[in-house]
Amino acid sequence: HCMFPVWLWSMGTTLLTSALLVKFYRIMKVFNNKHLKRVIITVRDMLFVVLILFSFNVLILMLWQLLAPWRWHRETIEIDIFDKVIETAGSCSADSGKNSVPFICVLVLYHLALFFLLGYMAYRSRNVPTDFQEGYWISLAVAFELQLLLLGIPIVLAVRDTDLSTLYLTVSLIIIIMNSTLTVLIFGPKMVRVYQGKDVTIDSPVLLSSNASKNGSSNSSLSKVNGTSSQ
Image: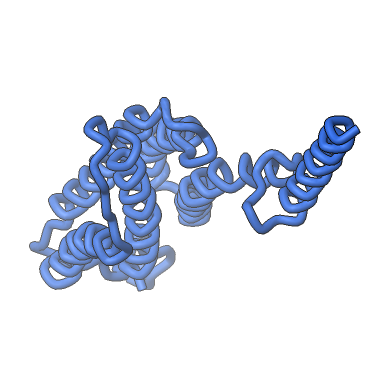
């Protein structure tokens, strides 16, 4: 069960960042088309990129799982004069003779590379209207999550050898904040725009009613013009 949270966090974060990356890629291909050529980007092409990024993440996790997986180990901390165990401590770590640090470093660097690439593509598409992308909010989310990683990793290492409840609470808060920040900063502004009536679709009642009123006013004005001209 020690590797289960790692799998969930890593795969969930990769799916989220890869989906945003292919979205920015499609936007850049369409809006940075200087020669005005026809650009076709199918759903299959985007899913293929997501699959590659996700497969690389699964490959790292599989190698870690097979070569140096974390297991639950319990160590004796204190015994009495009769050689009876008084206090023990358990933690998730690799088996004796195996080192999981290289896999942790590769996995963290991979996610950092995805975050930096996501921030770069958000910056490249900064001139695209907000109706088609969320570059500003994604840039804020990426900057916030990078700060959280840079601060969270030393904090986890600092509380690792202390109380187990403190370590569990710290890691849980970091994972919850990282996975919810990007989602809130993407969907929050959209929900506000929809609530304020600034973001409507072609089939929405608001737009249909406005178009109908515009068509009605234009028809009435046209009839008035025709009536004055006939007189």
